[in-house]
Length: 620
Image (cartoon, rainbow, N blue to C red; front, side):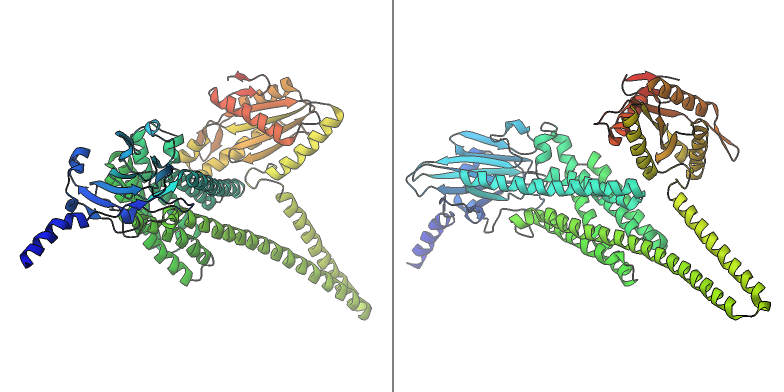
């Protein structure tokens, strides 16, 4: 009798292994099919649907977790789930695969014998639903029960991230997600523009590295969320696969450069520089792997790089914090939020942490926290700069007040002392007066220096904006033409790279002197930024402005810069904009049109003058 019971149990065991069907009950909350799924592993990836359907129930294993996630094995996985419509009315549902980076996904049982084939290694237009993620629509008749079989194969994370929801709930879900994604990428764009603007104004490279980090991280997120394949390269499948580890390593590279600058590691022990160079070399190696090595190698390399950089960054930040560096506290708080979120994302891909809506968007949440914290840090930095400026002004006023008090005391003393000491009092008063005059002259020189570029001696951009507004208003009243010349030294980066920045500074000074000699007394020449200069010409029409631009260009070409025995030939590309302003004319319009003409001159071969209105290109 006991033996008979054992035989019956062995015969019934396959039936017991069959998972319970998943009932599709109407509601707004998504259903997670993971606990109702069974999986069969196909390491070789040779099985087809007919072979899979003939497998005994004992070959299948329960997923037994929120989501089917199997790490980075590279195997093929077959998953099955039985769906049941308990109502007597037909229903339309959607199976949403939240991992858009799956290479291949096939679904059997959605629509008769029709096979759903998708994945980021298949052309985007082959999908049934044109969506950034993998969307599998299904319809069940009233009381119908259907077996759905999925075949998943990928070289990346074999993480299905599946959820079931009604078609109406899916539409509401998609609207919310698009709004949130728009807000997320909009915040990244605002931070990118903001920090680039600060970099252009201050020339502080920390803002440049942070701007490039934000841009590359946005690119990385655009790929990870499936937008890149949908909108940028729907048929470039090879590039799409390598772009993911490439963008990850690129964001890490700029993050390292920003960390090195904002923590002022250059002025610290050499070990910081050596470690930073090693991490930069590792980042470049992963970028090279992404462009040349197999995808799996590059992907794992980018993950290891992220983990190593996170660990090293925590150690260095803690050391700088301990050393009393004021920026280290907010820096540690901001980067830790992004690093922890990124580690959650990596561990979710390996299957160590169950997938959820929180882990799926962990990096985006961490990035937003990091943006908020760094915005506070940047604001604190600006406030500190303003505080230092106010403190310097207060010290200057205090010194002036002290001098005036001493002068008053000397006058009181003059009334008290006898005639024999009158000469000494007058001498001291004269000395104090001289000090006040020097202070006044120093204040005037300081005010004048604030209006000029420290390198070339030309007016700076602030004065340019003020004077251009004044000249434009005068031209509007008199209805006389006004002209703007936008000038750029050609290939100036090559001068810096070949001779060094000190020689480049000498070339800028030489070019400024040559151009200033050609200006009229009522014209204004200013340094616009870097190797760019702007000249404002009042009462000058386009032919006159063009003639002056040609004179400037020819003069600089004929007079190379002589510096420390070097003979450096320079050339100018000049954009000309001249007009008689009307009521709608403004400063930005003049500068923009002159800048467009400058780009025409550059596009035509450089060392030439181009006019905005005529769109002409004139060569030397």
